[in-house]
Image 1 (tube, rainbow, N blue to C red):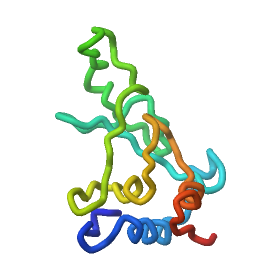
Image 2 (cartoon, rainbow, N blue to C red):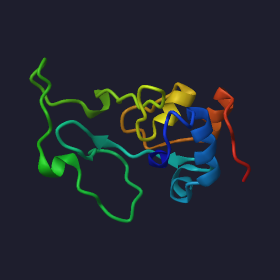
Image 3 (cartoon, rainbow, N blue to C red):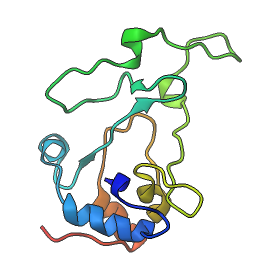
Length: 136
């Protein structure tokens, strides 16, 4: 959704309001995790861009993930397979220097999810940050 906006013209807080007005509910997530839940999509980035393995998928299809095409990467320090839940979550920002897809959420709230976290509750987050909460 942030693809339609420019960070020079629309602040992170304004984009949050637009997003919440346009998408007040995520019915698939709410069916599984309760009222107000919104899905988080996970991808492995870098030289490749694939769906992250071990993430919970709510789609009607079983997507191909990183491990369908590649083996588990090895930690260069330990020589052991990486632990997916210990990988860093990339900062997504929305400011005069960066306009990352979805970056308005972290920019407006100061929050980012834990690795492979399947959902979050934006109204709870908005209340803690003083951001717009849509009426249902």
